Amino acid sequence: MITDKGRYRTFDPDTTGRLALEIARSGEDVVLVHGAGSFGHMLAKEHRLHLGVTEGSQLLGASMVMSDVRELDLEVCRRMSANGLRAVPLPPASCASMRDGQLHRLDLDVFRSYLKLGMVPVTFGDVVRDEVRGLSICSGDQLMAALAREFRPGKVIFVTDVDGVFTADPTQDPRAKLIGTVDQKVLDSLPRTERNVDVTGSIFAKIRYMIDMASLTGECLVLNGKVPGRLEAAIRGERVIASKVVS
Amino acid sequence: MITDKGRYRTFDPDTTGRLALEIARSGEDVVLVHGAGSFGHMLAKEHRLHLGVTEGSQLLGASMVMSDVRELDLEVCRRMSANGLRAVPLPPASCASMRDGQLHRLDLDVFRSYLKLGMVPVTFGDVVRDEVRGLSICSGDQLMAALAREFRPGKVIFVTDVDGVFTADPTQDPRAKLIGTVDQKVLDSLPRTERNVDVTGSIFAKIRYMIDMASLTGECLVLNGKVPGRLEAAIRGERVIASKVVS
Image (cartoon, rainbow over all chains, first blue to last red):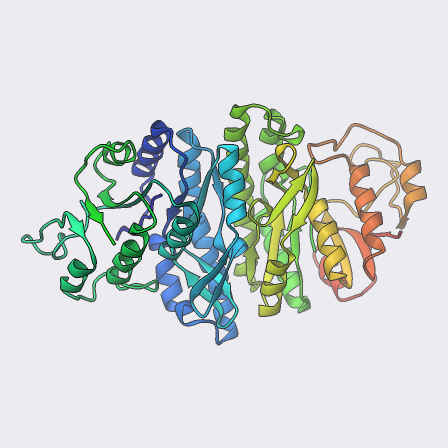
């Protein structure tokens, strides 16, 4: 599984294509999750969709955000099939429902069906109906957690644009050190900054999700997708530069 | 509801935008269905997806067809939201399943949820998991029928690029006459040609679907979406040039 919530404002077709090829070459059964990235977050914030729908005008904004994230997903799926991965997009708006901001139901049977056929289910952060709020945002992390609970995968891999989880923001602080093993104690000790606070929660919430997932899987890694071959090696079970998350 | 299975090889953003505006101005609750058009049929035929999946190579073809029809759907949804319609794309691959080429299950609850919020569910012809065949093609017509059965809409409107159902192909035969009322007897008398035979069935199968649907709705019409105002007038209940389908 991959979630990509880097800070890039644009889609990188070459990196996405290479990552798809690395997954294809591994020959493993994979479910892929990507974030909304720059395609969803700006407009979602503007319309305050993470707080639920209280005004009619938000519905039009929600519709536009849906189109934006689907444009990203289409690009991802095109790069996947161009590299031999049989992508099947499964947008949560059409196969999930939320309850007060939490993923309440995900139609796992639809994921199972396409996996069984030998295809690669692809899902992503999306605007989804919410029993309480009308609409809310379902993050890639919530989807990862639900899928990990159901499928108990051999590996859960978070692909990002730095080598893993650092003691500080590595793009800002030259003294930032890669943390080899991340657990609750490490999380508690990380400095709290406002960076990476988006509509789906901060990096801390993300690591919290990872720690929960680590107990459901053989291995939970955060690694750098910008370094060619690292994802493929990790899927194959080789040791790579990464942070390992443990529960 | 709209299904657009015209013979155009390209997407017409202006007409789509105008039709969206006509629907928005009507103020009615709408579910919109569009075909795959030129975006899906060519590649689907090439990979013989309508016959089910028997070879692994078809799965990659299926993935590409999914991307193609989603590209069309994205264009449709963008034109809709640009004209004030709060589109929510609900692709059948993620909320339906087939059994031996027939639509077996459609998650109508998801359509209901977004309708209730004041949004416009949009679905379309797609490649969908099939319990018997692995994958098969779910046509816009099958979706229309399932939605009509559930929602019993006041009107079912098929929007095409000619004035309605003709005695012969109006683009080929200058003597072709518009048929005011279409029923089973009229269908039986229509000349059988190979034109419009695509992976989802011929125009005869389409009319057969319409006749079945006519019994579930106040009015079932086939009309020309290329004439400005005609769709809007029909939604408002005004008399327009069209074929009326009766059961």
